[in-house]
Each structure stands twice: as structure tokens, then as C-alpha cells.
Length: 89
Image 1 (tube, rainbow, N blue to C red):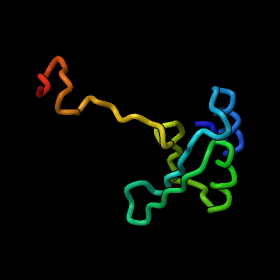
Image 2: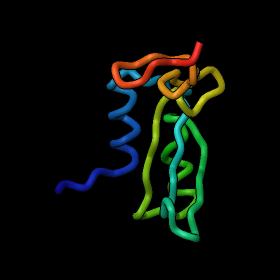
Image 3: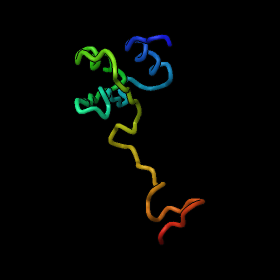
Image 4: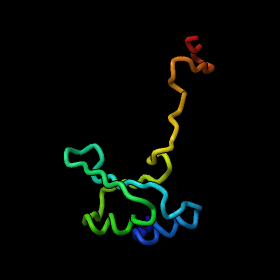
């Protein structure tokens, strides 16, 4: 598997249509006792990763689901009906 630098990743997101101010998060050692979450934007991914000395074991999440205007899915709302479950009225 080819490694990519964090600078290349930032360029990739920008070329895929993500604006520099799109919310992002870098999760270091997710689910481990020493887990750390660093919130940033696509434009500041490089500074966030290098500034915190992250070199591996990190998950990067990008998208408006991390922002303030994201609407949660209604899939598990009690009133939502699916093929397998009738919603409460």
C-alpha cells in the first residue's frame, strides 16, 4: 500500500470538492485509553497533524457531520417507519 503524506491528503480533499473550511477531525489511537481527538478543518489538517507530532495510528474524519449545521438521521427516531419496524404515532 502506498503511503501518502498529510499534504497530499489535504490536496486530495480540496480536489474532491471539500472547501478549506470543511470541518475535520484527527483521532489518534481511537478507542485506546490514550485516545486524543484534534478538531480542525481541511485547510489546517497539516498543521494539526504535524503540530501534535502524529505520525501513525490516526483516523481522519472529514465532513459537515463534524460541524454545527449537521442534521442527525431519523433512522432510529421512534416515529420513523422502515420496512422492518412501524414507527410510533
